[in-house]
Image (cartoon, rainbow, N blue to C red; front, side, top):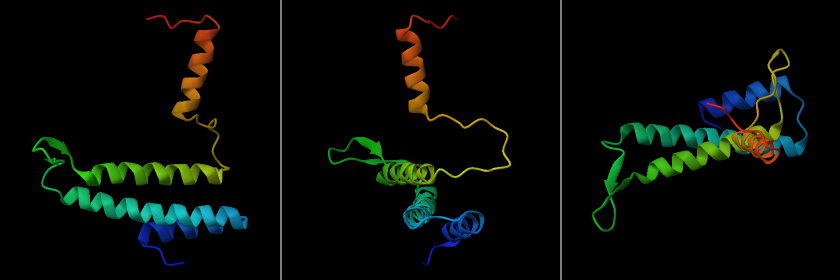
Length: 117
């Protein structure tokens, strides 16, 4: 596989540190491509004269590159999280996703717990 600089660095780092199954290797390859895409989109956004552009009716709208950057960033994060790899030297507790935190809050409220300000 041929990746760009950061995609190749990620691929090399993960494959050297972990023995991946074929399905995990496919996910890693997709993640590396997404990381390279994010880098290209970020460069394009950095070169924009403004983060706003004119829509079809002349209204101000966000530059389309911003939406693409957001989508590819989310896709990259999703793929990386699907690998379920972690730093074994880390003493930190596993972090919860925003969705998991919201679920916990919803369950607590359902049980009658309320946040006090």
